[in-house]
Length: 412
Image (cartoon, rainbow, N blue to C red; front, side, top):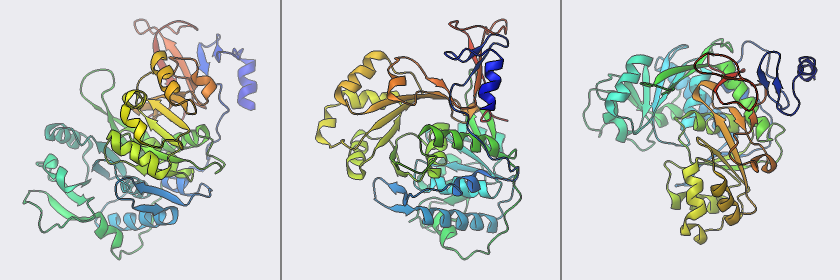
């Protein structure tokens, strides 16, 4: 209310959110209240959300399920295990892995220790990964046995994510295999005292190409992640714990899109996340049918495939209620083609960056999405300017320029 009153006093246009006195666009979304306790980490914040959810994660291929009580028990066990092998507050931990139901557990355990997570793309070359390792200086890596060659030459101690990995039968490498994730989860470790973590402490070090050149490290704090989780829960109308959804993870968790949604934000909602290790059209359709998926975050090429593929007819997708597209805008013709095939499914869109912890603007309802080509309204608590990239001069409404964002989820 105070924010709305302040904006009225500033002469903010209620239709556009634009204030001519300072050339700022203000979000028209209802402001989100963030926790004021300075000593708070994102894992604790997520675990404290009240909901009635039962199943947290499902492996789409094997059917393995992790309940919410099991999830937090595994996070605590893994944190104790990581502490026992020397991971400390401020250390950087690398994860090189395809999607798995253990990815969120690693993320949350690292967060709870006050350590810093950095991720990398499994299809990156060994040279690209070595560059990131030199830049981020991790003390430990999580990976799978098949991806071990990509860490050759880094001399990093490794924890294998394969539950069935036999460390004694792996090919000889210069890498030190510390243990497996199963070994850490099932080991009897002394309960380690949790460090004092402040919201402004660094939480993640994700890499983005930005606009030019080689990829660059983007530093996000626990405060940034807590803001992102809060906005996501409000956006999905899940902050009350009502209307639990079943989500299908088709996007990579090493990317901010997947990390923000599936390894953190949605786990505060009580929803169920079905995880595909890699995208495959048939596997995705089978998972929607088998697990009665209701909500499908995706990227435009997957929506194109759903709109056009004859394979869709072989599956019962009647449970699907919403798709959320991010990564690139959807054109009018494509949206109309999709809606013609799936008339009962709402198509929503979102815009975000690694630098904004995955949020920025969105269409949150079917009515908002009917305005084709839009990225939607600014996310809650976000402010923006449109600026002439040559002069730095702030522009007014209906002018093209460079987008500047300011808000609680913007990188440190």
